[in-house]
Length: 390
Image: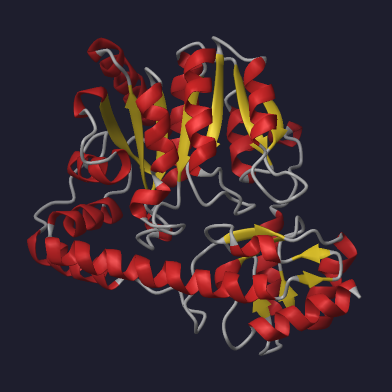
């Protein structure tokens, strides 16, 4: 029967990784893979995580199962960072998930079981968002996320919400939009929140990069503003980026309601979906995060490391923005964008030329990972952009 399976397209990013690895040029630049890199191109383990892992090595007494909910100490330790110190914890409950991807899948599957039939989503978006929606059998309704001027398109979101209502959910990036880097401003979030409440749509909030934009508190502004206005929402959270735990797959799924019975049902359905999907989430990374957040010294060290990461990416963005205009590309907007990613309006031919002639690797969409640029290669990158757009 397996011969009846349809061929599937190869993952373009994985193919790009192979091409980059096979390129012998020492000056090659990787702007494709979506991980943080230091000024020397490394993706190190956080010092705070190393400290937490050392403690786990000495104190962890068992590797037995924790259940489909995972490490609830980890889940609860994150709540004040995600929702704010004054949030009513009676409204929220959560469970561990394998990465932000697992958390998004849980959120969409719980929404489907709750009666959601359509997911509204701004585009471009993280490619896996659309794949997860499709796998869940829900209808995806898209609207434009970025204006021609490079700002978040609030009018497009308003238009999408005007046609939405019960049975609809809207998927919003909390901060550091992937792939555009274009976030809603605080003033825009202040408009979005009451619109969501008025239209009775279910907000699905994906917060995958908290701390990498403007800071832990500022990056949670949109999520917290929405939750203050709506009776219920689902949240997908990732620690893969802001704790550097990519391969350990550390995420959390949260449900927020105004009704204790509804909250219990949401979590029971989440546990049921998790049990049938991955049974139990991986423990090690979540346990390390729990250790970091339980110790004031490790927490301070982690936050300082985040500050350094954010500062480095801001320096890269400032240098790119200073280029002002490269051919038809307005570079200044990159300076006000956030997080790891931005999209450059390049043609497929230009992207291919950057790769073949200059050893610069980026996604076919023009998405670049800002953290792939360093003081050693950023001028080379700018010169190459000038060459291909001349």
